[in-house]
Length: 202
View 1 (cartoon, one colour):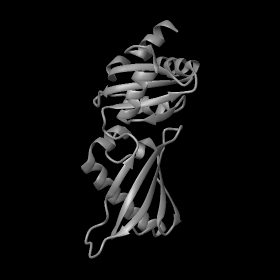
View 2: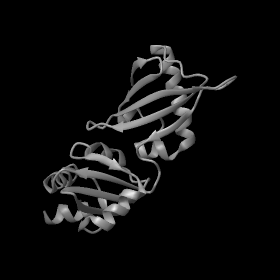
View 3: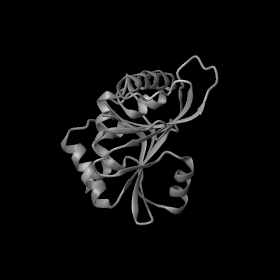
View 4: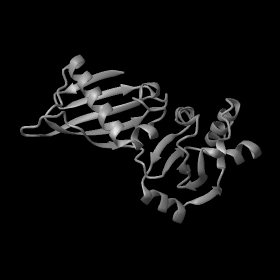
């Protein structure tokens, strides 16, 4: 864990996937709002001790970005000061994988998608079809989007999956609106179990 104080109102927090508090993956961390709230209070207290970033008595906003190496960067911004507040301000927002039931990754090419599928096959990621109820590949605006729906939160290798996929593509969205765009305007390339089918046929 590393802190970078940009100014009195903004802080960057760098965390590896292994350092996510009490969670095996980012999705697990975000899906448990009480855990996320408690963990960020502890992290912000540590930031105050180490770099003097004081978020007490403030409403704050937290944005998260997943890096290609599997780590995460959280940007904390102090907003309005709370009068007579007795508790440390809690995160107002975490921008990334909200618990919407699906997640979308963007590949620059079909070869990049195939390389990812080959990588997790070589690294013996077991029963990938059990990772989610549906895994579909779409082509839209000359880019390939992997739509993962109804993720199995008990899948034992979820953290490895998330850390591996960002080596080959970028996290794109978890917004329902973009799912509708893909289904209406995109071309469905591989229906369901897209990763398993790619491993077997390409």
